[in-house]
Length: 288
Image (cartoon, rainbow, N blue to C red; front, side, top):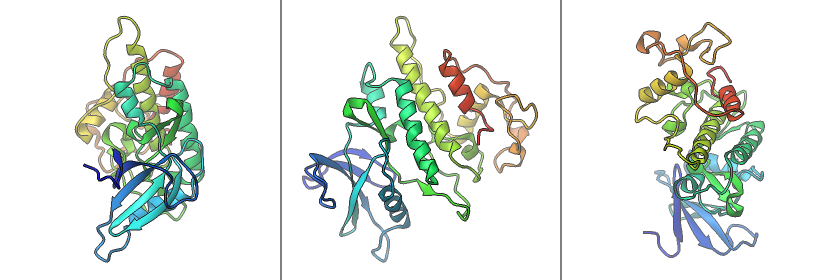
């Protein structure tokens, strides 16, 4: 249980827990009714701040955009690093689980998420963990902001090789599932498209006679996710450029061996136009 000084726990990020506190953040002169404090317990042997925490702070400090959670400041207390940020009204995941109808339409939501991602990518930042839990609601759910930058990284021409062990499994681009460390903003946009599908399906469930539908792809393992993706889009292949399953260079990826996977031809995702046109444009292997 959170102590009184920590405040009410409202979430758990990649590397720390998030608490809601009343009043203004002590690290900032900005006056607010409340703020969110992400508390990271540092475990470095020399008592210093971990590289991942330094990276997250540096990235957040440089970001000011309507669709990105703003950081007010930081504070180091003993072995705990606190990131003080604006406080929203819960996550998109919580809204999808408990709100009916949703406070925002799927179209309005994906537009805001993509605007936030466009800003990040224009500043050479990959979020690498886009999912409903990391989309925070403001203004009664009408404003969405991207939060939790624990896995984010800044990319430049001199950036060392990226890791593919990022993004929560259900939202992971097949590039990452197949061990490809040469990726860019497409991994974030892919996850945004899956959020859109899940929200759209929830909207359709509210129609009379609609059946309950799960998120488009759910599995407990990477291989299970790949099978579900391949069944929908088709098994990747290096021929037929006009197909969604076209993926030049896929045979050279570390975890892809054509003999390991059945040849799936793909099938319709099952959305109505125009959403289907948007989804089919994004959910292609060769969209980098």
